[in-house]
Amino acid sequence: MSEALLDRWLDDVELLAPRAGRDLWLREGSLLLRGWGEAHRRYHTVEHLGEVLAALDELTGAGALDAREALLARTVGWFHDVHYDPRAAAGSNEHRSATMARDHLHALGVDDRLVDAVEAGVLMTAAHEPDPGAPHTRVLEAVHDADLWILSAPAHRYAAYRAQVREEYAHVPDDAFRAGRGRVLAGFARRERLYRTAHAHEAWTGRARSNLAGELAELGQQG
Image 1 (cartoon, one colour):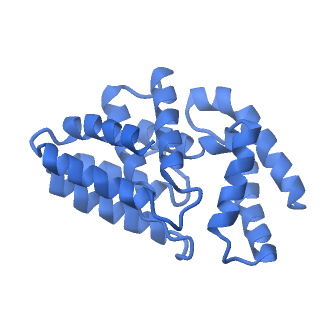
Image 2 (image 1 turned 180 degrees about the vertical axis):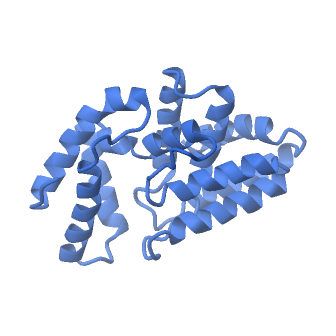
């Protein structure tokens, strides 16, 4: 998977930073994949990155994004969990990932306006609450939905995702984990609209609601 992802990165970064050159493109791609491949990760891995990019491809194919917006959304996807420490304080991972995005995109010579938009997209994933009045709203909404695609995954993948999250937070005692996980999932379950784009709302909501209800029931909570 990493080799295929590196090829995808090279395609994207050539559009983002055509003057940087292949050596810098490769260096930055290798850095990204090292981050996503850290040994302590269980869910926030290259598998998750690949799923986010695939979800963005699906949304682009459905007309949620034009080609320029899709490139910007994928760039957010590349960086949104490049730093991930399950022991970090809430929001810390997203802020550090956003800082890395800004630093490394600047090093590539990416336009400041695009860098600002990528930073905003990464930070949005902390709370998953896109600002409807913000610039690049369509990009933010697509990233929001792609990052939450996993909630709508087929049953076997959703079960694996649940196990991966628990392994990633193995340092948290069971009672505390169940309570925290329940709060997060219940927050999503209570949303009137879980997904922001029309395609995700229509195609993914049913499975997501079913997955959420099933897990919340096992946790002894209601959505």
